[in-house]
Amino acid sequence: MGIEDILKTNGSLYTAYDGATPSINPLATKTSELHAKPIGAAGYSLDGIDKTKVQGQYDGYADGLPLNLLPNPSTLDANGVEPTTALKDPLINTANNTFSNGTYRKFIDPKLAGRI
Image: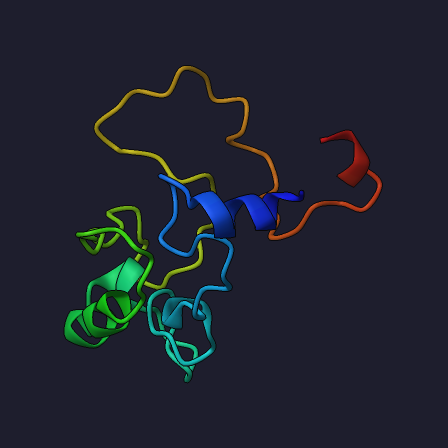
């Protein structure tokens, strides 16, 4: 007897699906505005805009839990400006300045990718 058979027979405390395939989470599709809008602008998780639409998608996902609260948007957004250095809180002193003359890259150098 496999795990699917066990779930279908005995159920589980950790899921409401008990071996059945759950519905697709609307926040995991291209139409979701949780992280980005179709036009490429920031989504709710960065700017908090369109909370009503995202809340509807969030509520529409039946994951079997009695109550899911939509997380608050990030407070780390740089207002759409691409950073040129590492982001930091200006009120906290830096432990060192070893990165101050470094290069901020948007990608991992392929020669280093396997070593991270």
